[in-house]
Length: 522
Image (cartoon, rainbow, N blue to C red; front, side, top):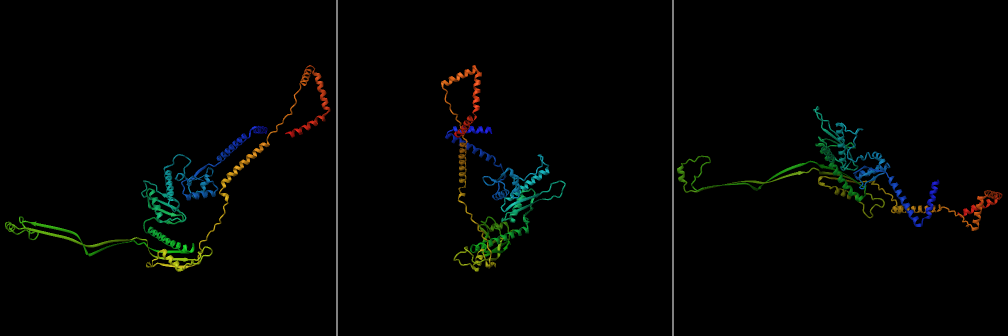
């Protein structure tokens, strides 16, 4: 305590000797040092964040943040919102919290189940590890497909051995968890099966099975099963599309939830190819023409007689009879074809042969303020006409439309209570800064007042009048007498002491009166 009291007295004495400008400068410097120390302390006590997951889609990042906040774990996002970081001390808890949403692995490779030793394992262990990594990468690539929330891939490849004559082909199994409301159909399953078959060596697409978490298996084999699945899927999509068109038209007039439409479509999946060939005898086209001309001036014998037979005439007589004659022979040959038209007609499957539409509408006027003032209510015939137009009714196909009136509950409207926002919320940061400034100023003023109260009391000793020359001479004589005759001086002092003991009250009273006066002076 003595040290602190001494330090306080010294600081108080220094403060009293400083001027007003020096006091203000020292106070500002002290406040700046305190602010730096507080900021450094706050920075040092901040948790060390480590990356939990990176390169996340927005939907997955939102799910991860929700799961971590439910576990009361502090979350920090990177600048582009695709990475999530958590404090180092909460890393294991965070991995457990998101184990069903995301595998906290930044390398893109499945976790390695290594032993305690750092040496490489056996060839079988290395092969198993490579297969697990391949399964993990395939699952991650499948999850990038729209409509797939998560995927898991299992690959089975038999071990090659020279002593086994019968070999089993490689096989793969894929389990898909579709996203809520997503469109996952047979065509998407075929694409996934093709992707897996191309990524695994020696795997045929027919040995890939795909199943969702609801237990439905998607056929990817070629044949009647695959064709029927595709046809049923196409028919269901056509029916849904037509029903949505009719429902949206009715709800625009009646209100949401006041109409329900169901469509049954008879789809023609037959594929017909027809080839027609038409001949027109009135139109002839020259196909081929050949002209042959032969001429002679008499020097050469004129060939006559049947072709191939020798001429039964004498050579001399023939030359005499043909002297001075000219011979010319011309032959034309032409081939004609009748006009012909070839037509090949191919009908594309998927056409609608017949539609059957059933609709239930609620034509009662809406209660409350939601109804349109002055608008006449819709009739049942008008509703039926709207349905016919929306689905593309065709009487030649034999389409049927049935519309009935009934009371529907509709969609309950959720009215959210609007909570008024206080006006000071917009200026919350400014108010916070002002409060901090006022608090610092108030603390400074209180500190100055306390320091002033701690100002030391300086006791001034009463000044004695200087001794005169005669007194100094008497003092010198007394000193010399005390040196020369100390016994006499001792007797004189003893006599003075006896006189002081005889009057104790007279000496104590002035002392007591001097103490209050000294305190008043302080």
